Image (cartoon, rainbow, N blue to C red; front, side, top):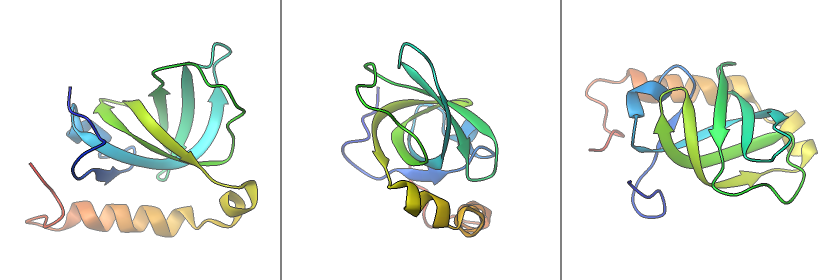
Length: 117
């Protein structure tokens, strides 16, 4: 498995996530639900699509609001290696629509100078 610790990661939304199966990705979104065992998080991606995030170990703390997931794309899921949470106030003022427009722009340029192999 490719590790996200080293090297570049592609920023994705729900619409393009499937194109990066097995590759390092960064997914920004809002926490919708955490399973009772703490092993998966449902995240609403920047484009509004629900994405399941699989954790490598159970959560120890409460997770809510804006979250940035670093992991490996697996279809409509991300195998999380690490994540960053933001204060609730930051999440409520974060312009998710503008962020999603930036992600859409990144993936619409041909040839894509930000894409790596």
